[in-house]
Image 1 (spheres, helix red, strand yellow):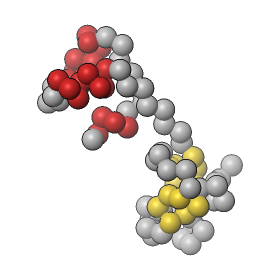
Image 2 (image 1 turned 60 degrees about the vertical axis):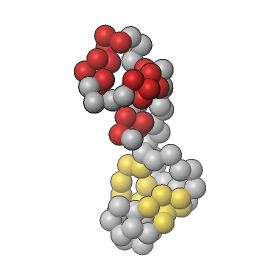
Image 3 (image 1 turned 120 degrees about the vertical axis):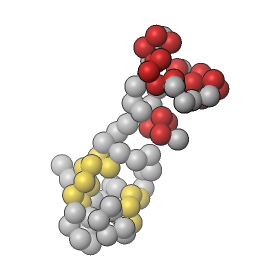
Length: 79
């Protein structure tokens, strides 16, 4: 779902009302109490050299958006 990756927590219904359109009541209740922390890691692909900001949830491997190969997150961080 698109709203599951938002890094925003809305504390009141008034603040979240523009985002409520099109969502079911159950999904809205989950969104209203959900806080998602997004950690951004800059990675470099060892195969093609592409550099990107990885915002995913995985901790071991990420997929390079350029060549679609698996990249080890710990070994290929760019400082």
